[in-house]
Each structure stands twice: as structure tokens, then as C-alpha cells.
Length: 409
Image (cartoon, rainbow, N blue to C red; front, side, top):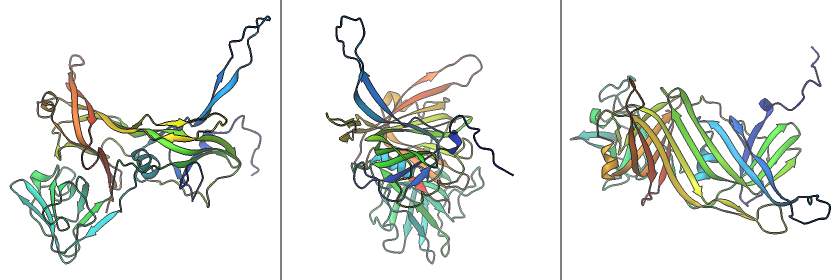
């Protein structure tokens, strides 16, 4: 069959792709690029044009001139595992992910102890937990005791927050978590017990990315020195988890080929995270809210991030990294004052949202010192009464905001 040519009036968005490479020198492409998944993009260059207010005898206005050129825009995406770890999360947090921790039992050397509401994870092997830190979510697998949860798993398996690492930090972890009341003391035999974790928190190491948009085989727009001024993540009833990242760049340039040093790596292919099985829960100080969650939103912002311009060049000369802030929203059903009382008392705590994909790969997004402000909303007759919370986060010795990713197995 002969392919038809000449049928397109314009390039089609289905052929577009966005890739990036981590810069070692600001504004300079380096390394092999990685494609991301995205829903839409407004990345573009923008020119500021000004017309001189000259007085002429002809009543004709003077020609406008370019006074500034900027580059950047917003990329909208649907949340999926591993796709946005670097380009969005490491970018906006200005930090590197810690090493992926995959701890397995050996000859039954890991024990989960549940005693009077206290949960402890311990090991008889020195240095067993050396890769884990305070204020980090971990996931345990391979346990067989504890109460049976709604998904059929046992309470000893699941998500736990390391409140502190105990008196022997490499062998003892003091935990809190939503499964605490149903946990039971257990020492899985052999190598059955598993702990999975990897973490990143807001930092101050400047990171930038060389971003390029490909429209056709020989048509590229390149955005050197890309920096995440802002990123959001949103989930709610009837909608999968979505996000945005606002990019500030040094410049926009055209190209006919990729700037990647090798073949551009394909984007991950896992399913997006849905609002049913994909939403694990929302937790305040490690405990389940005890009420239904209708929606949540997270905003991570480098407030004041902006390009630095100088006369004589259209390209930015540098970027102001801004001040990191974390805020959010939470809409939950109102049935008692357990959570709402924190508003009046101005009680802050660790607020976390955990999501996962269809394979079980999960992420925990945690405000380490979240303060809630909210109001009870009565929308009309015959409706559920809800509380709309605003979340503001303050700094702690462990940071302001933490993201933990945990493998499915």
C-alpha cells in the first residue's frame, strides 16, 4: 500500500515529544536525554515589544522594538511511577534522590515488634538499617501476621514512617503508621522480610535541565538552563492524579536534531495513578485521618525564581533560585472534631499523602511540619458536610517537604 503524502495542514501534536538532560554547566546540553510523558505544554519563547511614545507630525506611531526575550512555560502531566522523579521532583526540590534501599531479611534477622501501641523494627545484623534516615516512609513486605486489611493483606505489611531511628540507629527503628493498631510481633523466617525505600527532601544544590521539544524528525525547540519555579500535584474523586511544572529557561533556540549524546531514552510506560486503588491514604502524624478524602493538592514553589537579564543579550545571564515553600489543600468529610480541632489549636504535624500505581510502586508526599487552616462547608440540602483545609508547611531540622518512593516488591 502506498502511503499518502501532503495531507497535513500542520504538524500533529501526537508526534510531539519532550525530553531532557541534566546539565553540569548551566545552559549547556550534556548526556543522554530522557523522554517524559505529558498531557500538554506551553513551553515557548516570548518577546516583550514596546513602542516609543514619539511625537511626530504625521500622526503615525513609531515602530515597536524588542526590549526583552523570555523562555519557559508549563507542562501538564498525569502521575505515573518514575517518570517525573528527576525532571519535576528533583528539579523543584533542588536535591538528589538518596540511594534506593532494598533490605532483605537473612536467616530471620528482622523483627517487627508491636507492644502497647509502639511499633519497632529491629535486626540482629549490625548496620542492617544504615541506609534509612529519620522522617522517612518505608514499605515492608513479606510479613504474614497482623489483622487482615480491606485489600486482603496483613497489617505488618504496608507503609511505616520512621519517627526516629532508636538508640541503636542501624539496627532499631521506631515506627508510626496507619497499620499500627493491627500490627503483631513477628520475625519472618529466612529472607522473607523486605524493606523498600528511597527519599528526597528539599535542598539547596542548584540543578538545571536542558529541555527540548521535538515536533517532527527535523524540527526541535530547545530550552537551555531549564529550572522548575513551581510544581503541583492534584488528586480527587473521579480523576486520576495530575500535576504541573512551571519552567523558567535561559533561552529558546531552534534545531534540526536532538542535543542528546545518544539515542533519547523512551519514557516509562506504567499506568497513571487512579483515585481508587491508586490512592493509599492521607495520614496525620502517621495515623489515618479516619474520614473520607475527597481531594488533595500539593504545591511546591521556589518563590521568586526568575531569569536574570542584562543589556546586550536576549538570553538570560543567570537564574535566581528563589525561596522554597510548600503548601497544599485537603477536602475531607466532616464527622467529628478529631482533625478539625488542629485548626483551632494551631497544632502542626506530619501530613502525608500516599499514592501507588497498578503494580504497587508507591510514593509518599510529606509535609514535615504542616499547619492546617480550614472551614466546614455546608453546600446545600442532602449533601455531605466537608472541611476545606489549607496546608502551610514550616521548616524542620529534617527539611520542609519529603518525597519517598517505594518499589512494589
